[in-house]
Length: 260
Image (cartoon, rainbow, N blue to C red):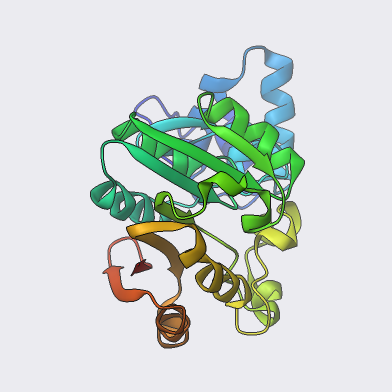
């Protein structure tokens, strides 16, 4: 998400350069690049990368998420503004103390937002990608980080103890990957996007295994698209979770909450 900047100069060379590259919010992006670059050479390099189509957050090296400035390393999945709705839902449900898990954590944005509001939570974050975990380590300095595939990365002692389980797993159907914007399709790993034929392969895996990890009354929260709700709800119900759906028309976000 690009934030408006009062100092953006619509006549600057950088703005014109970004406009020629097709950047819709060229003035705001130019202001952010100018504010972030430490030297003229760095500014020129950042402008070249953005003009070549690199996501703005990868160019800057950071993103805003729930009011926090978070590190975003090259190739790591960029936290989407719509996922702030998932973070807000988790924050509203979380106890002041207890255990939280951020599966497929990427930059660690969800876990960072959750523990910012609930610093008493003990956070565990997992990702299969070592580059994502290295990035998350900067954003989650107090969390326990584990590399591996979903729940396989978690230590056994967390079974039946998790109060909040965040799982922003890939949910784009495989056949829709080619339709994504080039920024995502060409600069983010496909395994961070591809959710299988109907987009719900990982959602099913997570919901099937979640009851083994959730504490009584614990909550699993995932983000899906509107048309995936019926199938995802069925998966939650089959796993023994009480299911409810939350929508945010403003953020174009849908979250499914399963409670044990």
